[in-house]
Length: 570
Image (cartoon, rainbow, N blue to C red; front, top):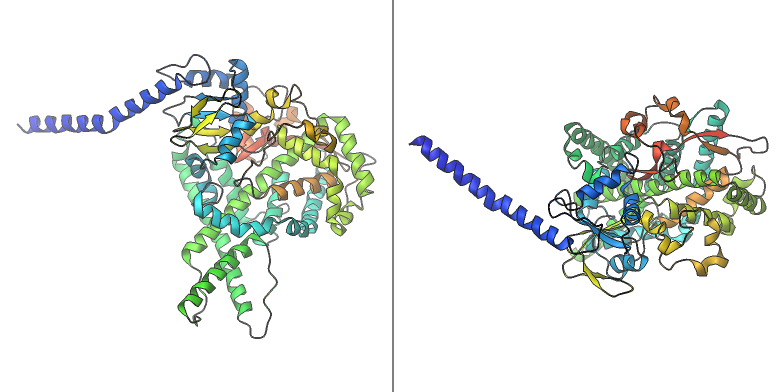
C-alpha cells in the first residue's frame, strides 16, 4: 500500500513539473520558432534547431575565440541576406538576436526610441562593477549618476588633465625604449592597459597608481576579474557557474571594494574636516570622480538637515547605500575608462605600421605642429589646446575606432515597439529580442561605407571630406543620451599617446614569435584556445577577441625598434 502511495506521489510530482515547467518551455519555444521562421534572417531556419546549426557553421569559418561582433556581417555575406538587420534564433541558449548594422535603424533603437539596456549587460558588469552601475542601468538611477559625473568630463576640465596624461605616457615611452633595447617580443596590450589604468586612476580616485612600474592589489584583482568574466556567450553558457570562477570573482570583488572603500572613507573624512574649520574658505571644487560623488552626497545631506530645521552636531557618517553605489560607479569608470583607449592605441599603431604612407603623414604633422621630438611633451603641457591642431592625428584615431571599435550597443526589445525598414517602411518586432547594434559590422558594412569599408583610410575624416561621410554611420561610442560619457577623454588620451610615440618607435607585429611569450604569465599564454586553429581573419593577424571589450588577438605581440633618427621623448 505504501509503495502504491509513493508511486502516486511521484507521478503527481512529475505531472506538476511537466505542467509548471516543461509545457510552458515548449510553448515558448514554439512561439519563438514560429515567429522567427517568418522574419528576415539566414535561410534554412529550422523549427527544431532554429539557427543554431547555421551559427555553428559560421563559427567554423573564424578563429577560435574571435569576438562575436564579427559574426553578423560575415553571416550577411555568406547567406546573401538582403537587409542590414536580421534575426538569429538561438533559443533556448539565450533570447533571439536582432542584429542591426544599418545606421538609420540603429538610430531608431538608440536615439529616436532609446530601448533599455538588455539584462545580459547587467549580468556581464556585476562582477566588474557591482549592482547598479550607470552603464547598464536605466531610468532615474542612471540619470542621477550621469548628472553627478558629467562635470568630470567637461571639455575645460579634460584640458587640465593633459599634463598628468603626458607624464604617464612618458613612462609608457620609457617602457617601449626598454623593450627596443632588449630586442624582446612583448604584448603591446599589456603595456597599453597599464598606461590607461594609471590615467583613469587619477581621473577617478585622484591617485597615482603607477601600475606601469609596480603591482597594485586593486588593479591586479580588477584585471583578473576581467579575464574571469565569461566571454564565450552562447557557446559556453555554463561558464559563469564553475566553482573556481565563482570563488575568484567573489575574492576579487572583496579586494576592489575594500580598496576603493578605504579611499572613499578617507576622502570623506578629510572633506568633512576641511569644511568644519572655522574661518576657512571652502576648498576649490575638484572634478575627479570620487569628489564629484562625495560632493553630491554632501549636498543631499545638507538639504536633508536643512529640512529638519537644524544642523546636526553628530560627526559626519556616510550612508551605507550611498557608499556601495559610489564604489560601484568608481569600479565602472575604472573598467570603461581604460578598456577602449588601450585597444585603440594597440590598433592605431598596428594600422600605421601596416600603412607606411599614413605613418609618414602623421609624423609629418607632428613635426610641423609639435616641433622636435624631445620638446613635444613640454609643448603639449604648455598648451594642451595644440592637440586640436593635429587634424590628421584625430583622423587616425577616428578611423581606428571605425575599424576596431571596442564595444557594441545591446538593448532589450519592448512589446509593441517595431523597427522600420528605411526604404520600404515595413515594420518588424523587437519584443523578446536582444537588440544588438554591432559597431564592428556597421563600420565595415559596404552598404554604409562603400567598397573601401575594410580599408584603413584616415583621410576620409578630413574636413574637406566630411560631406561624404555616412550620416550616423560612425558610432563607436554610440549616440543619443546614452552615449559614452568618457568618449572625449578616450580620444584625448589617444592623441597624446600617438603624439609621443609614432616618431620615436617603429613597431613590427611578431605573431610568428609567440613561442617566446608562452611563459610570460599572461592570460593569453594560459588560455590554450588562442594557440589553436587559424591565426588569420580576412588577412588580419590582430583579429579581435572578447576580454571585457574587443582586444587584439594574443595581446598584439610586437617587436619595437628605435631608428637612428627616432629617439624617445624626454
